[in-house]
Image (cartoon, rainbow, N blue to C red):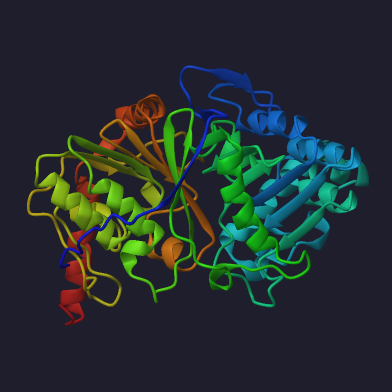
Length: 447
């Protein structure tokens, strides 16, 4: 594809002397904790404990926008604060706004939804007798617990739509002072590990906690748009477009932008455009650990830096690493026909292929759910936003860019941990799949 020039847009800059930034990783090899639901001692930071600590400190308000919430201990902490008079509000993705009693028929919702329900039932059925008792619902079904406590909740169908793509945010604001920005949904599978899979240690994720009133104000404005009047919210393109906003927290420069962006705006003004802007500033290295990477323009921005001698390292979740639309193929100098025997029209296989790119290898049951990039070991790009068109143009998403060498060093450490076991380069399996698809298309007379 023809490379689109990456532009740097002026951002609103505000400063704050208050606050600091902390980051956590649920598969951190340097820390450990005991999984409170499976009683498993494991490596990593307890991300649920991070959330509960911030909830416990609340005096006035707790605003949560997250795709899914299934953590009973977190639900209990939120309910306790609600009883104390704290204003607790929760926005969810409508696909996950149900308890066991109100769940939809999994036979009509597909294999993934059925597996989610199976996990939920296993979590709630504490005595493993195959029946769900009221006391089990009150102790383990987070949505049931929150609903029973009359916590104020809404989802992205409250705007009288069928949902805004995905309400994919994963953030929490406490007292207008502390903001938690997560790549993890507030679930066992994203934080601790699958309840039915002993080897699982949770999808690889990060969590960033920022203590700053100015930073929290940016997120409160986004939450206020989602919440609307409390009965009818504003999601997707019903929200007002806002470009990147930059604040300073104890010397760390942080830029924030929310998706989706209407295609009426230039791509460079979108959240993926912000990602490409910082990719385009790289002088020595770009390292990324991503769930999905399918935005051609970001790949093209990366190639330009690669051709100027910048080292490129990209690790992708195996489910999405070698799909025909994956930009990892571009980085490897390859392309794959789709089921209609077509290449994507904007494919751009690199002539100078990258060497340190490939797919992650994680414990059975877990996926690489990270969505971060590190530029020159100084700048971190992270949030709920996958590097995809859907995230950019359809979903409600968060992206933050942190310009701080210390924070970047922690993300680089996490990247290096993942890289140690990753399968780099074009695997034999990938080459065989490309060949099989070409042969099938030749047989059909379409290639």
